[in-house]
Amino acid sequence: MEKKERKCSVEGCGAEAVHELSYVDAKALETKAGLKLVVYRARPPRRPGIVYLCSTHYKLWKKVTKSERRARDLARRSG
Image (cartoon, rainbow, N blue to C red):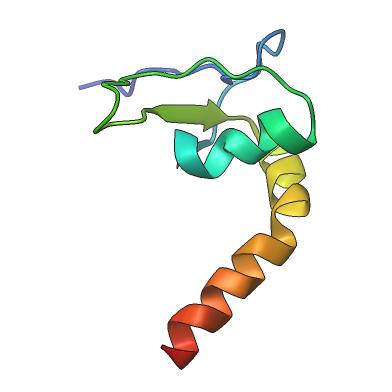
């Protein structure tokens, strides 16, 4: 069975997606970076959906959410 090729969920980007994230996590790209995301498999309110990101937008997401992810990891370790 052949793997289905996915495109980046950022509007205007046609690059091949290499990462899959929950929309809840990727929402920071909309709020902080001002990008518009196309959400797949969403069934609100229980399933917020997923987004696919190319390597460029994934790097941007990591940069934008670095402090949030670090705080979440520290909270998990101490809790």
